[in-house]
Image 1 (cartoon, rainbow, N blue to C red):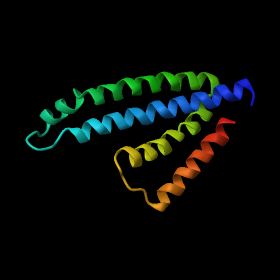
Image 2: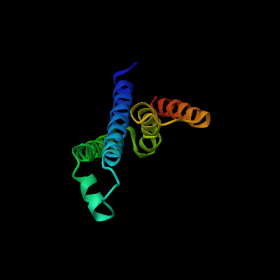
Image 3: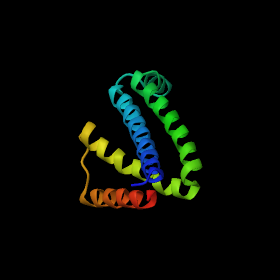
Image 4: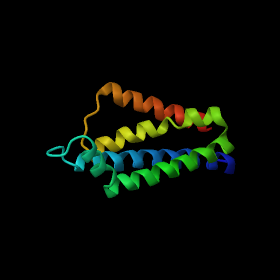
Length: 122
């Protein structure tokens, strides 16, 4: 594998990790805050001040910087296609962290997304 290909694959993986981990942190904060007794603005304020939510925001900002680097390195079209890997990673993390169930169709879709992302990164 050439250095340029390794950088491309690394940028795609970094972006996908940042996006998916940011999502998991924000979802974790949302699940930690019980809906009992807090409605509307109070609940929103409780969620957005949760440490996991704040970490998710930081990771999301990091993914924005990674996306900008990908625009420069891969080009806009390849970046848009390559970032689909984060969707498959989010599905995997949701299954692992939150014990969410995936249907066979979702598993097949995730496989297609990962395959496409690696083909685009080449």
